[in-house]
Image 1: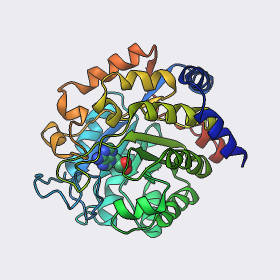
Image 2: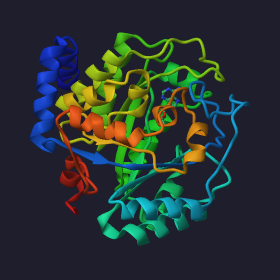
Image 3: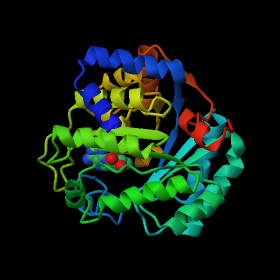
Image 4: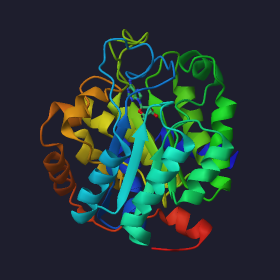
Length: 336
Ligand code: 5AD
């Protein structure tokens, strides 16, 4: 009840007051530093029929690609030597990769980075057994957004699968010792203010180490093509509320936010986000990992430079360490 009252109180604060609180919470735990995560989108094949997602089975007009394990290792090596210390391996739920394929990729990456680097997986809903195998192979972190806290909206947009199962997956990941990330979309059809408040409450209850919040952006090749895009001001306010209530969590300024508003990246960094995720994949595939149209890394040739500009505009600097969340360090004991 206390959490709920706190969320509602912050939700009603004027933005100026809210952002003053979130800025100081961020400064207290993360100073003015921003962590970089090298994002490698390894496959846009996906078995899922999520109605919002541009790489879902609904999209018949997108060229599909998958990187080979060697391509993946090549990119990690290249960016490790440039100073990156966290790698995020993200893809659609592509049946061509078996658990043993992933385990080989994971252990090769960990051979390159050693304990200096952290490896994050974002492979969707897998079984407990798979999550356990990946952890044993050396994976450190896992990202799995719950997308919405409303079970009815969840069922509608995620092809009759259950929110409860998604939440169970997050508990499984936490129980295996992953540094675990979750988050949600703003602007899904059927959503009300109360849904957003419940999204915030659920996030706090899950007590994650990382949180990603982005605006929904309609993709023309999906059933939600005519739904208006999410409101960036709400994304900012939700980010600020979570920074205040979960101050030790890593929170990225998400690419989707920047894609609909080019000032959003620096604004989010200013009000409490502390992570950026530059794309490190081969450039010929960037356009094809089209979760939503206008993904900033495909629209602009030098997204990395734009990220540096945003960091500077926010008065922050890049920290090259692997950057565990302080929440994780406290729960599981420190290692960085
Ligand atoms: N608009 C914004 N974000 C999207 N994602 C997927 N499709 C869209 C879209 N149309 C987000 C989901 C997913 C993450 C990898 O990308 O929240 O968890």
